[in-house]
Length: 132
Ligand code: TYD
Image (cartoon, rainbow, N blue to C red; front, side, top):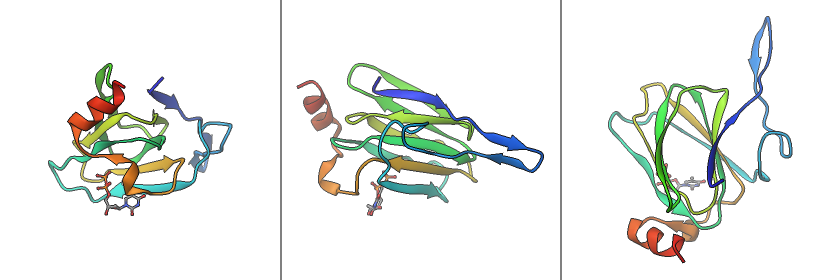
């Protein structure tokens, strides 16, 4: 699968809930980086790129957004609005995050260190490389 929604098991008790990410348990790669996207302005789209080397797990820890994913074979628009549900993205998936709610915080885990050179920011270039 080049992208997949993953159910995230929460530990819950009378105090509230906790979701842990642990390699080999619920993260399908070795986590080397984490970042979060927040304070996104209304009407703004983020992403609009593919990564040659990176896998990601996107978790809407607060609020909601939509993600348009395209792996070269199919395009799908996925709503992320539940912190119990993350979106796994393999390498070479074109992604656009949009329709962020005012309070959205999108946590992203990745298996690489940041390297601008592994980004494809031109859609035609992505289509060319993904079909090779
Ligand atoms: P950008 O790739 O434009 O974000 P998005 O994918 O949400 O559109 O990144 C915004 C800026 O942050 C850019 O200057 C690069 C920097 N950045 C890092 O330094 N490290 C990171 O891990 C990421 C994801 C971005």
